[in-house]
Image 1 (cartoon, helix red, strand yellow):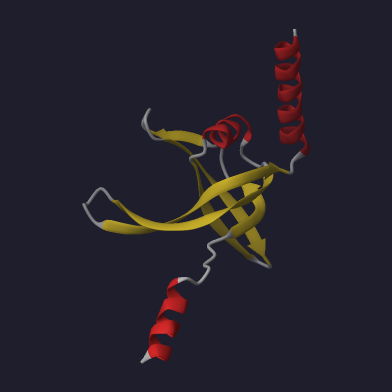
Image 2: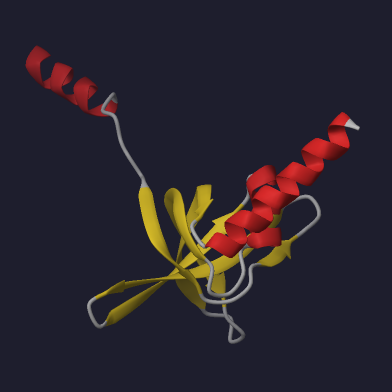
Length: 132
């Protein structure tokens, strides 16, 4: 009996991992949604494997990252997104629950030169204003 309890306790203290890393292109400009108390920026990223394209819904809740996504994530931007999978549902117009899968972004790296240089120029201007 002692061996079974030890085994069960061992399972409950296991480490778990919910981690997603994507590199792809944004399908459309990011959009600010939600409420003033709970804002979220949403966008979709396309990834390709051979002839197949998969679309991934990205949700950004972290305040600083949310602002960067809102300002710099535009249609066609190539980026890397790291985050975790989240499963839920939305209610459609007929009142039916429709399952959804989102990636909750924890980090975004802009890989497109134009988006990255716009962000760098913005950071330089902010630094210059702060020191003036």
